[in-house]
Length: 481
Ligand SMILES: Nc1ncnc2c1ncn2[C@@H]1O[C@H](COP(=O)(O)OP(=O)(O)OP(=O)(O)O)[C@@H](O)[C@H]1O
Image (cartoon, rainbow, N blue to C red; front, side, top):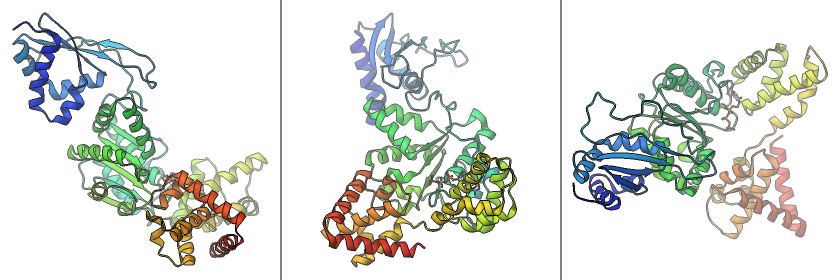
């Protein structure tokens, strides 16, 4: 072995490594490593996390071993020093020195310097603490199980596919499984039921993660800010069952989409299960890259519809039962007949009734009381109008094609129609500014705020505008009665 400084030894190693792996992998995994020391044939390198160390050992052990042998000779050894740089998500700034694993000839049955006792545990840098391959917090609500998800015509396909996936995650033709439908119809419940079932069946054998697309985006932004994009990516690539809820929030977020695209490919290629949900069918999610949309369609897409009367009745019975109460069938009929917009509202009706009864110390809820208490909710529930119909009314009024308000065009008449439709969407629906923006070609909430204040200002300064908006208001109001 010739006399080498630590830097030149590591540089020589890097030259060999570079020739053996892709540039991207080299940049992600080897460039950030710092050489620390070279003593008695042992090269110590500094890596930023335990996960990093494990990744190198798992994926590059053989390559590192032969590289070390070439640069340092057959007795050359590699030692890792894990130094985690401080970031606001870490509780402490800790430095852990890994027990060494010799890089010389390895006897397969020996542990060869692997730690006898576990190294000190290091917090995962991302939101979910405790990631170590299969041991992650899955983020699941244990109430969302198949047993509590009532079956009906409205959800039969989606529910059966979900159950098949839970039985055999990854090894089925429903990969990805894409479940979609309007708000409050049970997407999250169904998706999480798959996760809970897999946990029940496989325990820690399979790592399962449920995350909303918003949380995914936030984590990704945080990871980039802290130079941890590679770790972020590796974290997700290590998951066996990945569930991403409300994927429509990826609209317009190009970098997040790109990252998700790579994670998707890696997981899919490895036969890992991917489950996605959205408020609309894959092809209708706006501002999502074509290559992602086409991947969303690789497996099975199934929609959830509003449950028909009998299913609504069964859901109400079940919810009352879960709450440990008995409700007069007449009241259940009344609610099932009158709440037709989504399951969340059905639940809301039961909760309101119970709260009322308990506040007034009433043991027996009768139909008259139920009608009285739920009067406002019934009206609201039945008069809900969708953003799409508002867009139709407004565009009809202006004589323009409805698609135009969802496109990017900045033509004056389209901009005006779009702003009024946004304003009326806020007035007539319970949708958040974010959701409204999404329906208008994936615009963000500040655009919606701007639209609303522009319309308000015009109403107060121009009688012509005031009349126009009032007319539209009236048309929509009449239509929703
Ligand atoms: N078929 C069903 N059986 C029993 N409960 C249901 C059913 N469908 C929906 N629910 C209940 O309705 C509520 C709303 O469902 P969930 O949150 O899953 O809707 P979602 O489609 O994900 O809504 P969003 O798009 O707003 O996130 C939950 O409490 C869920 O348990």
